[in-house]
Image (tube, rainbow, N blue to C red; front, side, top):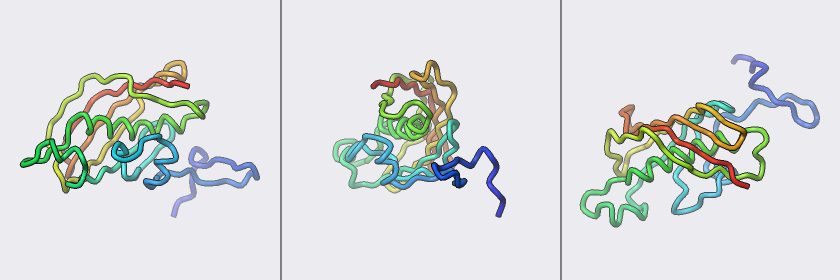
Length: 164
């Protein structure tokens, strides 16, 4: 096992080094994001690099409420929910940045969004969201992609704004 590098260590109030967290459970995500059922769309963060990126998992199940009407005989996860799920993964990155405690990042826009594959019940959506830039500690731009079985399902640029 390798020793954590200096950039992977933070100091606690007692000055004991503590390794940074790089995964988050659903309960830990709920402590960071305000979303709740039925709009909590990230089950787990499996890889997190502070200030850079996060990889999140969404297990798509038939019992989700949107499948009742989208579509009853052929359930497809709506594209807007795929994008929202990516935005929530991005929110985990943004809420962990220094100086934003108590603020709320809201989805402010999207560019270059494309859908490449249908997402259906039984799929596991793997979303990778990378921070491109932050301006004035109030606006963020991220690049997101969502995959199922290593096949690209959706991609796009996501914009966020910090509100107090």
